[in-house]
Image (cartoon, rainbow over all chains, first blue to last red; front, side, top):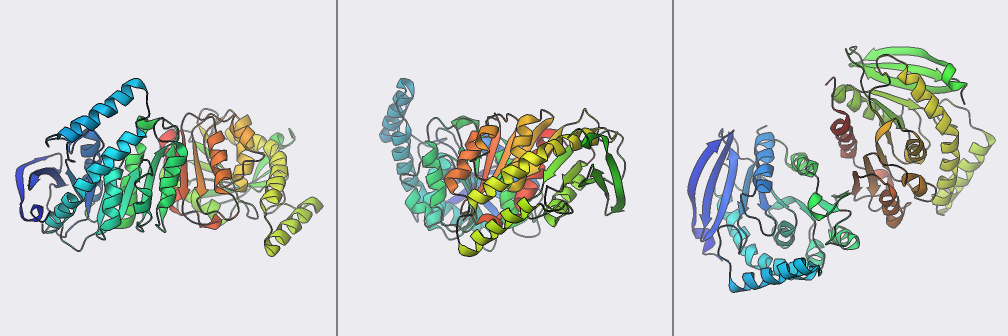
Amino acid sequence: MSSYSHSFRFTAESTANGILERDFLLGDVPGVLWSPAAPAAEPAPLILMGHGGGNHKKHPAMSGRARLLVLSCGYHVAVLDAPGHGDRPRTAHDEAEIDVMQEAMATGKPVGPIVVRYNDHLAELSLPEWKAALDALQRLPEIGTDGPVGWWGINMGTAIGIPFVAEEPRVAAAVFGQHWPDTLADRARRITVPVEYDLQWDDEHIPREAGLALFDAFASEEKTLHANSGRHKELPRFEADSAVRFFARHFGRPNA
Amino acid sequence: MSSYSHSFRFTAESTANGILERDFLLGDVPGVLWSPAAPAAEPAPLILMGHGGGNHKKHPAMSGRARLLVLSCGYHVAVLDAPGHGDRPRTAHDEAEIDVMQEAMATGKPVGPIVVRYNDHLAELSLPEWKAALDALQRLPEIGTDGPVGWWGINMGTAIGIPFVAEEPRVAAAVFGQHWPDTLADRARRITVPVEYDLQWDDEHIPREAGLALFDAFASEEKTLHANSGRHKELPRFEADSAVRFFARHFGRPNA
């Protein structure tokens, strides 16, 4: 994995609506870094975001959240394509797992066990990538090593985020949500930073008790559960605003 | 109870820091109405707040929330002293129930059954008072009958608020929290307006499952649970800001 940490380079750059967007490659892992277009005098906090399953680093859910974080808080925001996602190739293993998942969906079988297993596999591959990305991003003067780092990821972004945050002392606050506790609860018990956790009260995939059990597992002295009525895909948009305020409460709004 | 509706009068008035505070008497029930000091061109929404057990209409928890609602949203905010609270006399029944409650606290016995029973009694007395207060307040031109009405009450403010909102079609959104479901769940099943519900994850008085059961009971299509780590009295202050945003999301900020 240390190969990643020596091969970070920007591959494209554009500015629009007050946001500087820079694509990068970390080894062969593509990522994006969004920043305030106007250079700040001081380094600013960095939020790492994990995208959802089947999505990619620039999915509107990611760019929309980044827009809020950059424009209203002055933060930097980075996303990596997860293994088998976005601009990354799928392996035969990816294809096989996706086939099984789609067949379960089509035949009305529970997808939970498949998603849990596949996401756990992707998390294992992702962890060294995220660590190397954080190393590289903190070498940029506009980020630096002194400022706080946050994690924000729902669904697969939680499956990758919980193991990552459990092992990564640089992450000081995290927003998670909407996952099964099976492979994650033990890691959540090692997380002590403030956590905001989103859960859908009428989730047709994740049993309510399973979602509550994962929230319960965090060892954080400050943790907040936001449970909203509605099904799995109906997480209200106002929870994105809430997550931004959560980070602003802990990290301030240095350049806003 | 109709006697209340014919005897509303202001008894004192003062203005400070942008807020007009008017004490009133509704029959023999004392209340307070907080409003923006600068008269608005249009009627503004009204938030009714129920105070907690052992507190009163002008407890800092009430005036602090009112300040947020008046200054950041331009709303009117009204609170009544509950029976046996604030400037109202205690009956022999009040004294007896309070004695039993304090003895339970002192000897480490569960207070739940006593609080549930006593609050249910107070709610029964309060309901016609709140209805008459709303009638009277809506006769004021700065409030009127067209604008939305909200309810915000935690603890005893939920014990009174759930029966009130279940029967009162004028209330269009409500913030509740921190109560047992025993006498309230059936009434919550008749509430369909948007609800935000606060619960303490480590409440030493209200079992977690009991709090979750009350949240589950609301029939509202839009409902949000905010569960925070911490004990009964440790509800985070940021939940007050969240409640204000909840009302602003539904009622707008007409004069802010």
